Image (cartoon, rainbow, N blue to C red; front, side, top):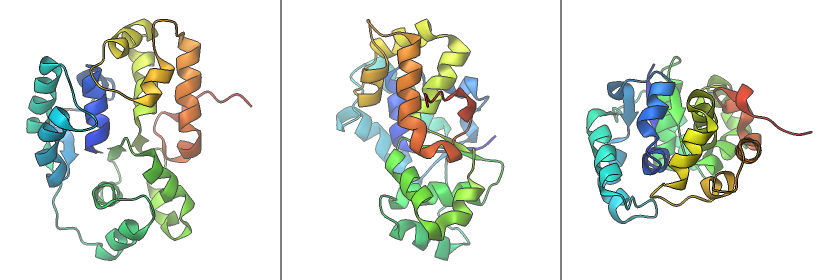
Amino acid sequence: MILFADNDILMKLAGCDLLIPFCDAIQLENQDCYLTSTARRAIPSQAKKGKNKLTNPDLYQKLVEFVNRTKAITDAVPQHEILDELSSASNIDPGEAQLILSAYNNPSSKIATGDRRCLVSLLNTSSLKEITDNLSQRVYTLEIAMLILIEKLGYETVNEKVIQRCVDDTVLRMAFGESRSVDNAIACLSSYSSEVIPLLSDSHLIKINN
């Protein structure tokens, strides 16, 4: 499987020491993970001083080593009009547009993104319906990644990793913690996933109370 990933989700998972376990859970080899050229250059700097700063030197080094094993998305793409249309939609930045177009051009691939606003915009923009339909059940968000990890590793293991994380995130803070339960984690992660369910891989893990 080929995975096109953004920097946000990689840094969040790395900050919990769950990046490699997630790749293992979805049977992804490092060399099959593709980032934009910009993201590959920016991640080491962003993980040192950006909003997703990794304060644990060992986890920072693991992330850098992972990024060095990834490949860069080829900048030259044939559907320039699709890229322009994606980039002109609200809350879809050029990097996310490139990930989406790359996945669109590779039907067996998947996307990993931490940008939920981008996915909501994609679903709510009628002119992008062909792309949305194409990406159905092919997207991993941080929330679905954590649900997959809970299923594969068990809640206690994942909760302990998140408690010891070296990166801040509102969803992780609400879903996990010393006084949290697996039911709380699943409910919280599912709630944050509700708007983008049609796009999500492994959406059977989402539990929504009607």
